[in-house]
Length: 516
Image 1 (cartoon, rainbow, N blue to C red):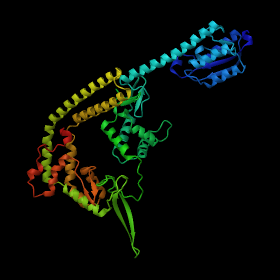
Image 2 (cartoon, helix red, strand yellow):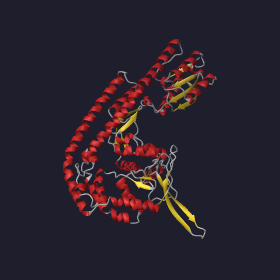
Image 3 (cartoon, rainbow, N blue to C red):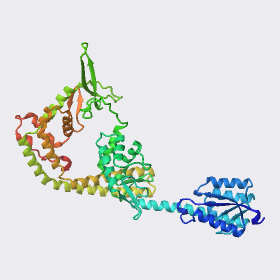
Image 4 (tube, rainbow, N blue to C red):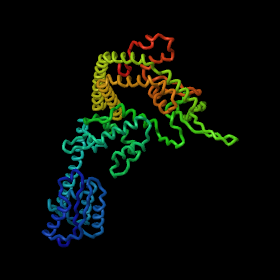
């Protein structure tokens, strides 16, 4: 049977895969195939175009073409090269089988010669095998290249919001404008008073949306807030790696955000009638749950209506039957005012404390240097452990999952140490200004306690006690968060303790966090 009696399908294919980068475009393939068909006097009955990879079986147009050949509609295929038909063993085998059963009589390629003989089919098998080997090798080489890139600390994928992929240097660089917004979102959520919806609104108000131009969903906001990439660590292949790009979020803030994400769970939607003044300030002293407030209305028989605000335990801990009762806002306010007055500061004491703080500033340098040296030694020890861990994994003494977990743990520890060391080096005396500010506030605590501004009292109590306030048996108790405030508790006993014992401490007034 000559070429005039054969009916051919013209098949052109090109994918976006790496292995097709050097292949002619579909338009070029069709133009060359039409010219070849005219030259060889081939009867082309249909032109079939496919834009899909041939690495795996399942191309719909290719499958339909073979079915039409089995049905006798055509008995020949015209393609630019054999690798346009198959780059996997299944599709290559189907072509060979159709040749064996004589459903397919002829294959024509302008780039190589083929004859439907045992020798021709043998050579076609070799060509299909070469195409598959090329794809397999290219995939393995690509993976190897990516592994080497990751080993160098270079991120191999699309950069998250706040970064951009620099095509010139093939690296990830900070997008200064968006990075500032992302940093602001982390800092906002770390405060613990925002919902994921608030983060979405925060980003939208500053021009950050999803790729489709829509407001970022809370699921996506969670992903952003839990992505360690922003701290200089990225995940690839199930492992955590150190990146060589610039981090935009401090590990300390990132850890705080993870705590908030874990603690908040489902967001709490406040009703418009829920009191805001002292909510979020205390925990229940019995079960540890939050203290919330609510309005209660009392109607008297004479028609008078009285409204009250009560604070009580949320009693969300189902494992504990909390016996705590509620407390009126007026009584709670008296107790908080009393606590604030205990930590008020006389003006003459304030002057002496400031002088002591300046003296402690000079002494802190030596202790900071010792801490930095100790941290450097710890980081070096962690680096040694990482190398030993890698050696154990390569020698197959350690299972892959154990290796990944231990590596992640060591990298996070190393990152925290490095950041703490850098932070203390750069800010060893930054406690001085906050202390000056606190002394200013402490000098004004008597006035704050006597005023009726509950929000101002809440802010002052938060500064002094942090999250240490507990409400139990209708009484508020708590310890101050700043170590140097303990020296000022003698204000409760003015006139009973000599001033020298109140003001003087062995360690000075510098906070222990900086005295390391």
